[in-house]
Image (cartoon, rainbow, N blue to C red; front, top):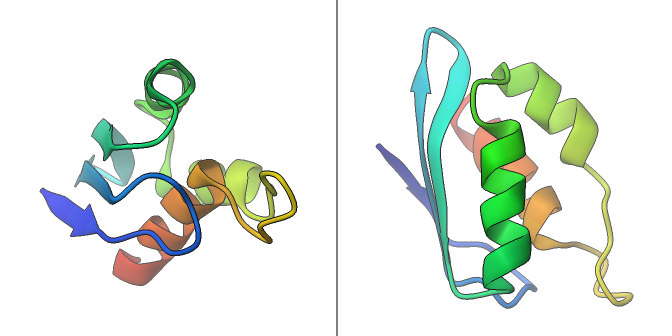
Length: 79
């Protein structure tokens, strides 16, 4: 299990596993619960590169980042 502390967003922690280059067991602490559950369900089973490609650069409220973008950053940090 990997753990990442996001920066500049409402969520305080992102946890996930990588099995055979696929992202699984994604969970967020804090943030918009329903949206993050949906994001986690959609990204589950995707390859690391697919998630990074789809989520990098997403902005939330002009913060310059978002919880999805922070998941991409978390994956980049362990890639």
